[in-house]
Image 1: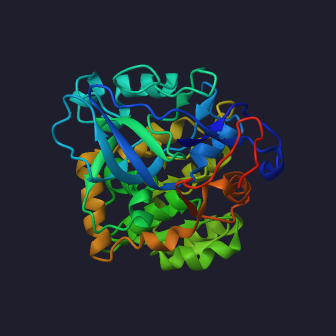
Image 2: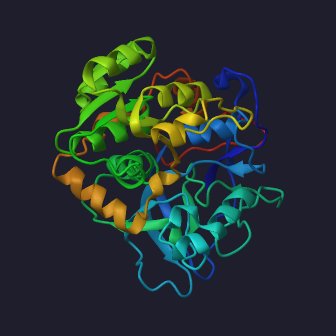
Length: 386
């Protein structure tokens, strides 16, 4: 099978020139006990992929990248009884063991065993399966490695969906929807009549806007430095959209003493600090972005006990994928989550490096890829396709 492999992180931009990801022909593994093989129909480029490429998120290399995708089950391993060949599935980037402290507490997004497997480049039920042409280990990305023709994942890394859901839609529900919608509904638990400000109108931020807009009586403010994101933010349900330099004025005009909830979907410590300053008494900042590990925040400590403000981390939107993906797809069916608006286009996976540049520049929201069928590449030739 063909898979996009990252062998060296931190290469210089433009990535269309440095070519950090190369499509390589690697052996297709069979699923082991508790695992499932899936043919990828659509994969999607996310900032979490970019953060591995640029070195912000340290992962073991070489790694077959990609974590947001949808596909069709092609083979089932032993002891998998609730999935069938031919099922359509959404891939999920945190597999949950169901037995650790976090899983027992009803927070599978924080599964300890799943986190360890993801950190090490393994799968939930065993060591990495992928091998390069010379037999060397290739690590899995977040238990998925979606930029491939096929993947083998833990059963816990997928959710079966109805077959009439288009793959261009389904692919965005495994990461962007879980993270952005979950930040609003699960982590912040926004209620009727509250004001919500969302910083960063990428796919995750726009999903948060959509979710907040579905709660009766909310005032939804959206902030992004790119003025061209304004129309998209409004179409996704924001009441008002502006750039960061006008954020404070927008909050002063359209809230009663500050926002009740701020969703920081940028991944920047300075934006987190600014967000805290725009909260009302008792307000909550939900952090869903991924700042570089070297970034720190500095803020007045007294505001937490003195004004009741809260800083809430939200990993994968505190989601329960088996519960939330069907729920969010049902909301989509009823026109409440117009996720099609986030779909910039669908391209062949041969254009993955150019897409990294476009994502870094904010020119795309969600670029989806078709599986690399009928394309060949030599691992030694990098970017030569036919």
